[in-house]
Structures are given as C-alpha cells and as structure tokens.
Length: 195
Image (cartoon, rainbow, N blue to C red; front, side, top):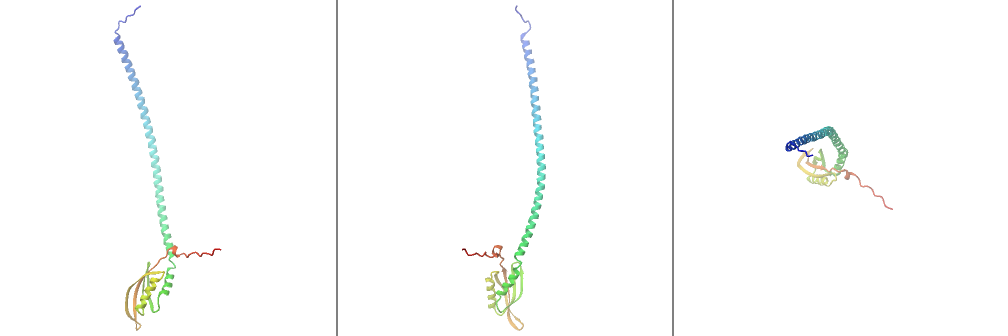
C-alpha cells in the first residue's frame, strides 16, 4: 500500500533542522562555557601560584637584605680592626727608629759640629746646631746623604753667630728618614757549606 504524506514535507525538514541547530547551539554554548570556566580557573590557579612565589621571593629578599646589612656591619668592623692592626704593626716596625736615628747621628756628625735641637715630624727631621766652619756643615750634609738611614739632606740656613765669645756658624738642615720595608729589614739567611 502506498502512503501519501499530505503534510508539507518541507516544513517538517525545516523544523527538524531548526531543532537540530538549536540543540547544536546549546551544546556549543555549554561547551564554550565549560572551556571558558576551565581556562579561567586554570589562569586563576596560575596567578595564585605566581603570587605565592612572589611573596616567598619577597620574604627571602628581605631576609637576604638583613643578612647583607649584617655582613656590611661585620666588614666595617673588620676594616676598622685591620686599620688598627696596621697602625700597631707600623708602630712595632718603627719603634726602634729613634734609637737607630741617634746612633746614626752619632756616627755621621763630624768633629766640630754641635747639635742644638733635633725635631722630627713624620719622616722629616729638622736639625739645628753650630759648626766651627761651613766646611764642617758640608761634611755633615754629605755624611747624612751617604747614611743608609737618612736621605735628602737640605741646608735651610747658615749664619755667623758669636756664642761664648767664639765665632761659630749656626745652621739649620732638614733631612728625611729612609723607612725600610719588612723585606729589607730582614737579614739575609746564612747559607751553610755544601758537602
């Protein structure tokens, strides 16, 4: 038997396509909402994790800053102690300098020279005294220049004066102390004979 559909078949197809379209639109909308929600929650999780990392880094940076401040204070204390140590070492190295200076002056002052004052300011020494002649002053200056402890003897002034009814030449000389380094101050080791 032959069936004849009297309903308009085009309307039924359109209605079916429309329903199919709305169902697909709903599914796509739901799928889009699910994807958006998953993306949003994933991004929020990443942001929260990054914020936690940032807070951790800030805490660590602040603790490191405190440690750096402590290290700077310790370095300042160390530098202060080292500078004190250097001053003490310099004093220790030069404590016998005065004795050596007087011994050297006793060796280098020729006969006929009378020292009146000796003033030291740092490495510079000012010597004032009397001499029987200008030749003796020249001899004194040459002796001071040849000395291993003194150098750069310079005549500042010389003039004739009468002292105790004697005519003498008053003079003023400046010289400098040659500071020896530790390596120069150490004596050379004695080498034994080889057999």
